[in-house]
Image 1 (cartoon, rainbow, N blue to C red):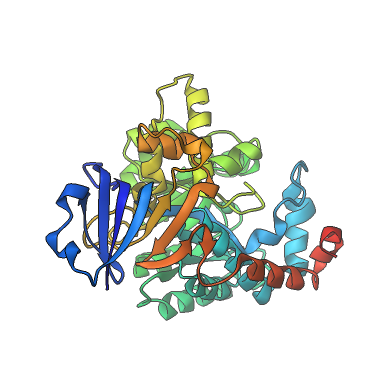
Image 2 (image 1 turned 120 degrees about the vertical axis):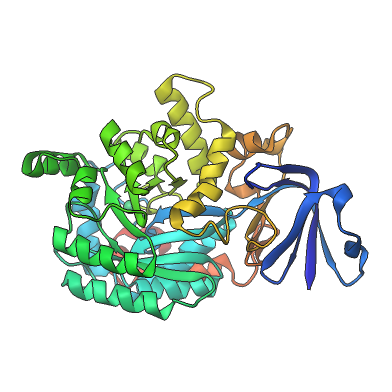
Length: 442
Ligand SMILES: [Zn+2]
């Protein structure tokens, strides 16, 4: 059945960056058929069999894209937030003791619900037991890539990195023809995997044309390690072992030289910018303005819920504006339209899914977010880009569609109750090491 959403400000994010105000979007099943100003609503729209939805002057934008996160880490949110060495004190020991298939599944389901409620429709996840993550994302109706994380020293799921790589490849094959879910092999970091492991993972990702995503130039100790042992930056190292290419999606890229940026451009590599995670951990601000100046595809990532505490891209958009303007001492730097493009079409490009999502155009998947403008913080609207970046927050997300299916309506999940997602996760967490920190949930 055809559906038309009318009386909305349509932020298309197409090549010409058209805005239709007021406008409409017509879609059928999973595909967008037409979009334009209200006066150009096709005659066939008068057909009584067409389903009309009044957008009530909200802003209709493409579904947002979160290109770097760890959905299985919901239980870690808020644990050791202001601890200097949170990674070694809390994360790694707890992960070894508590993380299993079921916890990843339940955590990813919750994370998917949380993201959908904030308007994120596509996600690149990176964690362990990713078969469970893929299943959870699929059941929740999201579009996503399940990145099986590999570490030399082993992790909670596999002690041998090559076994983890083989599992990742099986997962890629399993989802090869799925309409929304894909998988990839996602090595943990430049210094936590050997060159051979990185090369083996890269070969698989390249052959299946899925992202080779990896934490890069994020940590001070990582920079020091490559400086001392190789006389290189992490980016130069990746290039030297032949794993910097167009399938490479480097997460963070905080500590970058001009040569590093040129190398990314030359190789066609992409970047996940995680401003909330980076600044909360006092790691610095990635030189994204320079990367965009070289037309490197950059998208936004929240990083895991333990790092930035939020999985919503609207928060990242605001932080992006705040930190980059402050960093460059330029009020006009990093304008709102550019930031919305990172959250949508450029993020989709960095993830390799821009042919199907990231903009509202005929032929693309109907991945859409309706941001209401009736709340106190959303008045007045003069420029929708500005309203989305500087005024909106996740609580303004009214409705969300993925592949034409309405997954959020009236600010609530359609197919499942958030309470059910939370309760099942709490019950599971109580059976693990997390119970020691859960007095509040007795
Ligand atoms: Zn990360």
